Length: 105
Image (cartoon, rainbow, N blue to C red; front, side):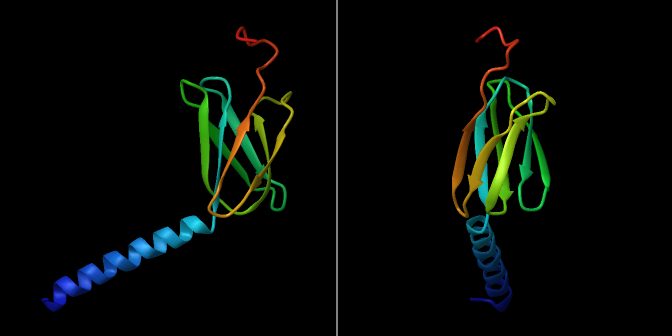
C-alpha cells in the first residue's frame, strides 16, 4: 500500500475510534413535550444549562451530556422540573406532562 494512502487510512481509523470512544463517555436525554416547545436541561453538579427545542411532534434530544443528574423542564418559569439521570453510553427518556392550557389534555 502506498505510504500516503496508508497515512490517510490510519488517520480515518483513529478519528473513527476517537469518535466512538467519546460517545461512550457521555449520555443523551430524549423526551416528549409539546410541539415546538423550548426545553431547559440543567446539570445538578455543575449548573451547566442546555437548551433544546422540541420538533413539530414534540420530540427532543440533548446529546453529549456528561454523566450525572439533570433537571429537565419546559422553558416557562412555571414548569416543574423532572429529574433525569444520565449514564455514559445510555439514553434517558423523559416525558413532560401536558401544560394546564394545552387543549390535548
